[in-house]
Image (cartoon, rainbow, N blue to C red; front, side, top):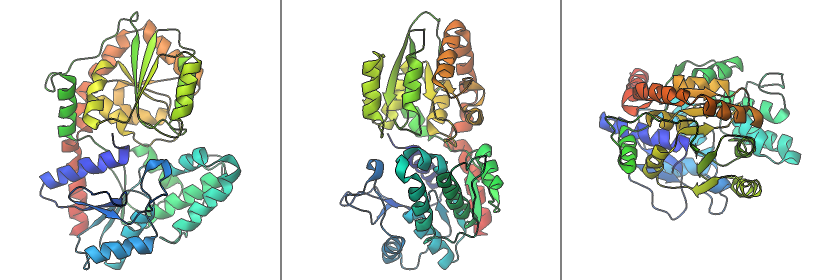
Length: 399
């Protein structure tokens, strides 16, 4: 079960190829592990694996490896998806070889840093990340603490990193309008294009096949308010995704519910202990094959995204929409992602999420209506729909 950014890149690359556009993906890779065709694993640390993911070595080392494999850097365009050493190497190479540079800004790194860096090290950690990033691109814009999205030093440092990273590109892509507006507020001056992430049509069809249901005639979810409501969590079990606050919400829910969790992360152990302590009906399945995970959505009635102020456009919401599964959210910005098939809690607090679930149990007709709306808008979240916008941008820049 790949994460959101890898899923998005994989689907884009698949549909670029279907339209006759060749692409090579450069990314950190586990040393000694073979990469798929069309994927170049840049030099990565053997033992440094934050969150279990490969971590690229220094920018110079990455560039040297890329140029050894592609001495003339014979690419028409560079498209970067992250802010790490591999991406910074690609950005520098784009400038050195005078290639158009596109940057997709995927996430709120300020919230990720604030949430995951241990408390005594937050300020130092944010300053260090910002300092290291300056080895890749210049930082003429400095973000100061404020009362909007940078209330702490670490968050101000990460906004400094994100803004200068985006301003180094020729064009900035965001998957959502709400993130575009935040980046513009803090000083990104480059042209923006909003292009949604999307799910591969073939992967989605495989999910329906795994579920044993019809892709052409998908069923609307139903719930009678008396049966056990089946909830579905398909993302990291981590602090920024707020699994623990959601489990606290389940402990307050009056209606009978069961939660299936697909994914792992830095709070998995704590979540398992909390669920056991509170005797919650939660099953932790870990990471499984992507199509198989989509197939298991068929048994669910409501997807859950409990993050607040962090996510830009979670793939888990797009996947749920494509499967006709409504999503419960507590961040009003994510209404842009859920479309009319979303269910918005009254706030991020556990009690507000619990009340939203109990309200659904009291008004079960809402679930079938939201499911129908998800299926009606399914085409919007398919890569076959979105890829034309990306190709049009590439063609304009290359010309």
